[in-house]
Length: 304
Image 1 (cartoon, rainbow, N blue to C red):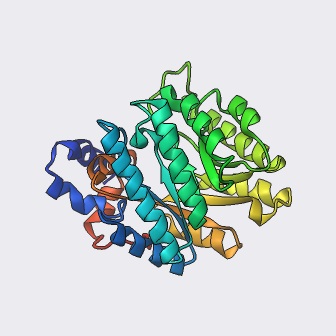
Image 2 (tube, rainbow, N blue to C red):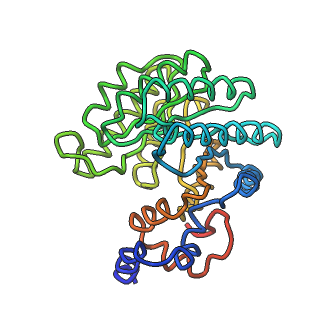
């Protein structure tokens, strides 16, 4: 079955969207804001926090970036109106970073001011390596406006520990993930064990300092290893949280973490750009093919 799933996933990108859409359902919380807000409410009711992402990367012009910014503004207001336990996650190329740095910085500044007004946190997503410096510059600027602005660090990048030393302070909110972009070996660690080692180092460094760590991984062995370190070092539960992508079938592990009183946040993407995102998720986890055959609605998986 694993081989069949892998082969089928590799052909998904050549199939029409109407065929792919049922397989995307576990990973994407709809197309409209009302749909994703309903999903977020359902997750909140089950004890999960959420962070909501409008799918998409890059825009053709400044008009497109402003449109995305306005969608996020509406999302922020709606989160507060519905009193949801949710933040938003933003890719800066979606706000025009690839067009003009100053323009993107200004848009993100406006969005941060709106988020501060409604007290809704923001995570600035990391992207591939040409944008790393610019993303951290925008983060360093916006976190001075609103302390609930966070950033993301990829454990497979060789530069990450140095970046952490430069960013680490009492206001730091940092999501640590392994990294998904195809980077050159000179930039990125390729060995899985070394990536995990660096992941743990980054989390431990944050928690040994004054920052807040968002531990974003589906690697159960890695989660267990970090959780043991947290327990052995008496790290306060208000210093960290665990994060997972919407639709990843690991509910047993998540419920175990919740039962220990840990905060668990689900990264919930939605929007009209669901197709490219879904193809990437299916290629990363071909097991979702067989799982999605019997999956008929948008919710967290019920199997571990």
